[in-house]
Length: 224
Image (tube, helix red, strand yellow):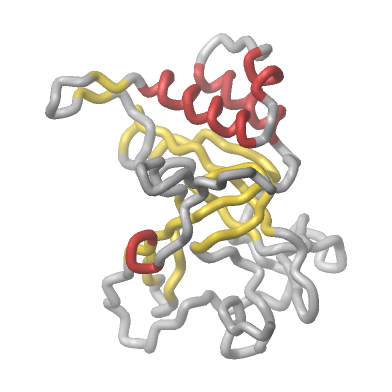
């Protein structure tokens, strides 16, 4: 079946960058990153890759310093594990949120998707940063699994539209991650109206849904 969803206008090739949607992905690595606006808030980032793309496709280089080197076989993206950063907080209801507990609960969910709960439970860490380093070691180069990925569009200085990717919250409508071939699937079906926050266009140039694809081997948008 022919489909133009992931093609760029300029080259006709499939983009090397993942967009919001339903994908089969694997984790190349995980980082636990402090937000630039709050020293106490952190994002869990899944540095992920889709299944290999067939046909006329040039993935990003694994090493940007080796222009003739190996390339990713699928589209890549950085996916926040939650729409919102992890931080200690007290909700208006009075319920207290403990950052470290929520982070660990997120990794429990991921481990169950990947059938690695026993390995996760065997980890011992001195603090949450050390715990996430160990989770990176455990989950990197994972098996393939299903994902529903949401996004928030933003316009760069050249007028092009990019997407900040994140996993939607679990809800009565379903879950964002699930093992392949799960019976009685509860995976959320991606909806642009529900899972994509459109950009407020401010530039003077017509906006597109893609960044120009570098062709000189200097792509550094992804450190996966």
